[in-house]
Amino acid sequence: MRIYRLLQRIRVTAHASRAHGDWGVVMAFLVLGVILLVLKWAEVAWVATLPWGWVLAPFGLAALWWWWADWSGYTRRQAMKREEARKAARLEKARADLRARTPRR
Image 1: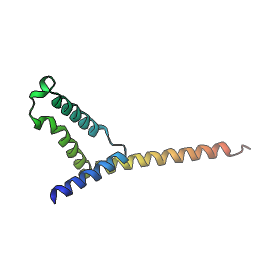
Image 2 (image 1 turned 45 degrees about the horizontal axis):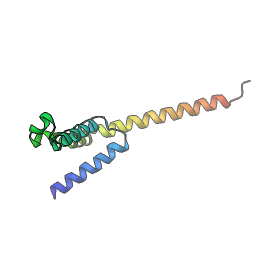
Image 3 (image 1 turned 90 degrees about the vertical axis):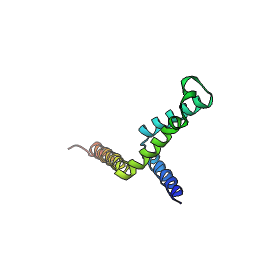
Image 4 (image 1 turned 135 degrees about the vertical axis):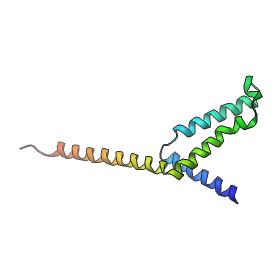
């Protein structure tokens, strides 16, 4: 049951991160993990000699990052910053439109 809850939490967090565009660190871990996994599977160079723990570690780090981002409020703060920026841009655009429409005397 605990594993199910953890997987649900990871899925919800991943969705929240995706919705708010917070992919920088997570994507780096996931891309590194996929590259290592493919290289290990294909038995290429030095990666073939790495233990599976090292190959799968980036996926664990991505999950850890998702968990920390939600736990610490980082995801919410980033979403609030983006919302504030969008709101400020929308207000500025509306003010500029009003200034353009107002006839000069």
